Length: 117
Image (tube, rainbow, N blue to C red):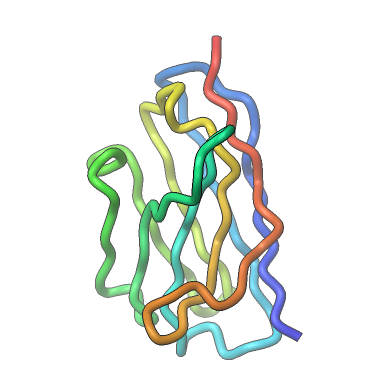
């Protein structure tokens, strides 16, 4: 059974930092690209970042470039999202997803990130 379990969210002040983790199981992690997708209150899903299966290539949505770093540890079957200089508009539920044929195939349960004073 494929499982994706996110953690690391929380309440942080503007300008603060968080590191999200996604522990995976039930599949060969190093064979799949992975992404982070978020959903802000009252809004639709937004792709945030993606990383190739070997970790050598990554991409970001323009709104987080320079503030966010995606990474993975294939030995630990874990995906990360390091977020710095957080802004109120980063407030959302963050999901990690396993990618297949360019689209998210499996999703975690999400972790809430709230950026507020």
